Length: 347
Image (tube, rainbow, N blue to C red):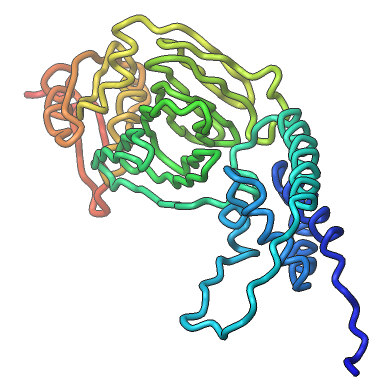
């Protein structure tokens, strides 16, 4: 006589699996992830989740939850066994129906929440990659979806793609994005607690000191809002030629003329354009392209206004122009710091 063993309640496990998938659509907390791991330890629960992948075509559950449900490879020579009975269509239809309801509830919850900068836990990245540029370097990268990423000097980004989301985190520097059109996968860029959302467009994001951030749209339309979603309904909608500037928690949107737009995007051509800005502002820009620290020792020089264009990979002509046109000398300290002072009167 065989010992009496508890019979797994697969119907209940399937219902619970559907509920877990719905929760995953709005993102799992650390506690929920731990609970899901505990739940997945029971064989009937793992079997139920495996079945979800075949029941719900088009939603690859095992890829989405790959960290909890790794794909299993079949043994090379499985032992002979009678074929498993084919499950009747009734339970498959019932499970599919419960999954539809669960997913609909999860999707409703998800759409009511503003989209956050990080992909929800349900969308475990299929590929994640860090891209960086050194000081003075410009890089252009074609991403797997066909989008083009351009990095300015000293920039670091992380790119994570999933079947439903394209997410980028800008950690430092400046980047320009030419986004491949894909309405099924929004393209999100997060920087300094702000998220920029696009589908198929082109825009520039720059991190400045503190919490300052610039978002410039060069083509199409983007939406911006707080990364935590708190101001999603009051977020900014920007069209081509508009610049959003965030400073000290305040935002300002203005439309640029052709000259201003060219000056702010000239870095992509390796050019630094000075269109009447102060020496202080000009050197702040120039400092991005050199490892040398630049200091203005004479306060009266900071307000001097400059015009012209210079290559970002060679600042010597700029320093020479300061000397010949403005009487400003440059001295280099032992540690490499460049100090600007007013030139001494010649005898």
